[in-house]
Image 1: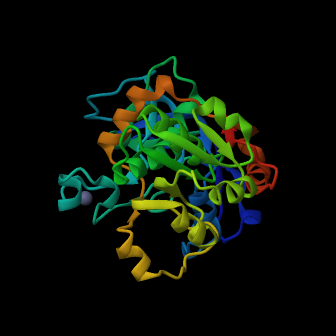
Image 2: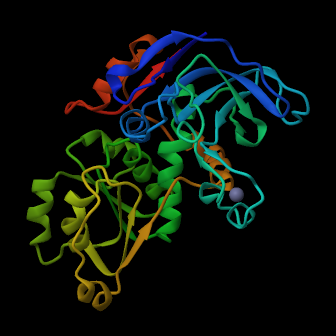
Length: 329
Ligand SMILES: [Zn+2]
């Protein structure tokens, strides 16, 4: 079977090789991968994480069909459509027992702490498999484990409630397009900060680009945000802080443009702002999301076969990107 493998950091070192098809161990199922999505975490794994020269398969977000099950697998059988919950977790530590598998003290990110899913077949522990309906589009399914789950958990961490105003920065991005949809489903007034008008079809009440927003903020009736969410990092810090209303919550789940920011502590306490970190989501949340998925959609910009994975990463980094970049199998 084919798999994308690297043994030295750098996208240019990612090669599609023929490797042995895995055999599912006890408690595992063999999944034939149908769709996989490219994410910033894969970039980090390929470019930054030191695996000491050991060959590694990246790929954090996949959907597929069960091909074969190992001994003692109870809940799955051949032909089931599945997604992979993207965290390794032990199920026994205090974090897991409290339903925070993404914070497992002995765990890690799928595709980083484990080999990932950019390959034709993958053996996955039953505890990481989530069934999805057979009529679910496989590209939407492949967007639930990281993109949609990150957005869903971020809004939960924000304690977003119906009638509140939610600003999604980078709204056309992988996670942003789901934050917009989920915010709308939860009854918020959703403002998408983006130049992409299609976000209106994804539930944004207002789509506004950076320039237009600047003009809006100077108007006396400008509606500030109860919640701002994004993964942009330091470049977005000042604007997101200024958009927040009294009692506002800023939820951060990434730092794409840099990690260091200057915080005005007086501004923070005087306006009673909460700054909340969010990472991934729990198994309970991914199960809830699958049930809601008939109301969700994904915008795919480009599709590549596994053999063209380096081009897929180039597309992911393109200035023109206008939706997700997916691998199809
Ligand atoms: Zn744990």
